Amino acid sequence: MRRPFRAAAQRFLVWRYGSAADWNCTYLEIARATGIDPKTVSLICRKHGYEIEPDRVARQFSVIPVDNFISLNSPQLRNRY
Image 1 (cartoon, rainbow, N blue to C red):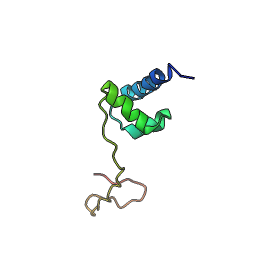
Image 2 (spheres, rainbow, N blue to C red; image 1 turned 60 degrees about the horizontal axis):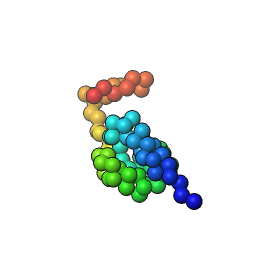
Image 3 (cartoon, rainbow, N blue to C red; image 1 turned 180 degrees about the vertical axis):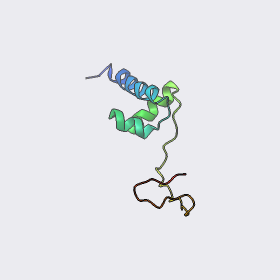
Image 4 (cartoon, rainbow, N blue to C red; image 1 turned 90 degrees about the vertical axis):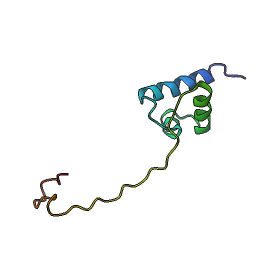
């Protein structure tokens, strides 16, 4: 049995999440939020011209060394940058 409204519903879910994020998101983020397969999300976005950022690997930030001039000597206070 065909599901005639499934494609329209998936397109709406992709559009809703993308427009809420101002299209500043990736295929994987949309797939996780909507529960749609990432390949399907990619096909929907390409078919309808939604411009999405390419999937990127989450990189770890390096630790910034802080010298005595910037850091505070009290453990209750945060460092100021």
